[in-house]
Image (cartoon, rainbow, N blue to C red):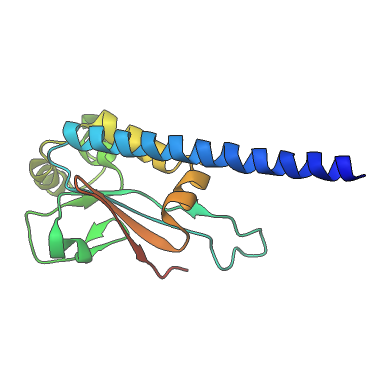
Length: 173
């Protein structure tokens, strides 16, 4: 039985090491991808998302997940005025959106008030829609969520900028 115990403990240690190596590789890839994203998107100053395990899920299992990703040109103190994909501050040159493609692609014209959409599009310069969609899908991928939880934690808001990542505790329901 001692041999079984040793083999079992070795298996567990191997699993931990594989997870550690995978997490390090995933984090390096994510940092590299984020850096490339900002190089392709000079008009985007920050990418923000919340990640958490819900406290209640109407009787279903509460599972960790990532909320919608917000892209914005806000910086500094103006980032405090970004709430769930909207900019609620006074600076009229700032934009924030949870769906760059929906706000910028011509196929969606007419879905919003044309005047409001034109105003938003004129502010959103220096944005590469394809790379934004790719980063958004990566962050919200269920396959990637464990890595995001390992990297940033649970019940947090993450702000990615050209200078790195800021993590803050967040309230949610």
